[in-house]
Image (tube, one colour):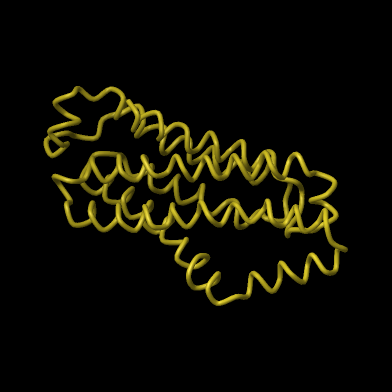
Length: 213
């Protein structure tokens, strides 16, 4: 039940987070000040979205533990590391907002720029955080390969991840469409999990076939 609900909660929270994000291609102090409440709401939704990915990763690893144990172990480990780092990355919005409210724009932007260039941030937090995307895609592809999910699921999930990156200059409602693709992909898995019997869930899925939920 927890796994199925997390698989549904993650894309829903992601959708709401994108939808409430202030319109900007970067952390402009003026926009942050003018949308202080939206910044905090959006940041919290992002944090909770990434937090929900922890049980999502564990659930998909669990589904693969019998038929693809190596991918299950490695994918789960990378996914958990990436999710942990993602949680820390989204807290920076609160610091950017505080800087925008307390300092002149030029000084606030310079501090943010310097922080974003620190090697510890770039190589210890930002880049390793992308392990989450790699782990999720790997787990999804493997779920399709072992016939636990149809092939359109990883394709839709990949498209949902790419959309926000290629629409950064667009309105928040446009960026949020990527989360709808995630909802279709992870929602399919969620329904599959929620309809599993206790024997199927606890005993693995090595004898299951991918059928529409």
